[in-house]
Amino acid sequence: MNIETAFPSAYLKAADLQGKSPKVAIERVEMATFDGEGEKPVVRFVGKDSALVLNKTRALALGAAFGNETDSWIGKTIKLGTVKVSMNGSIVDSITVEAATATAQPEPQPQPQPAIHETDVPF
Image (tube, rainbow, N blue to C red; front, side):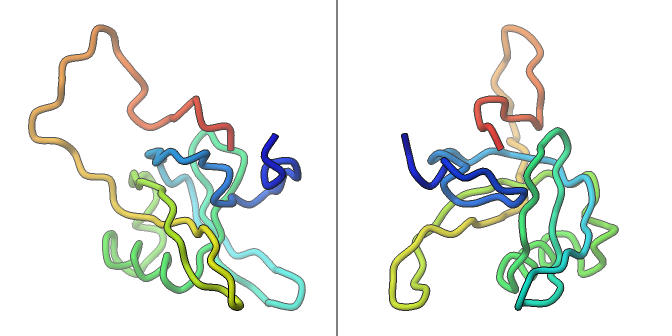
């Protein structure tokens, strides 16, 4: 058992991605209040229980991809990933976001597959 996944949260952690890079559709963006930190924007995804807290880096990346008005992000598909970052003197995993790009020549599928939902990622 990975101890980082033993404590469920309403907010997505890097460990929740289990080393995968799922594509998810943005359902809505809302503000949430965090003790001692004030309000921050969070992104909710279609068909997912956990939301992603936006730090400045993630917010600017989504703004660059889809515009600074968060209403224009609704329905857009993004790819989540992880990267190692320095935080408080330690190296930790952090979630990254990027606009999902369509491939020019999609590979044929034997049967229709959901384009957005990554059912093997439990968040």
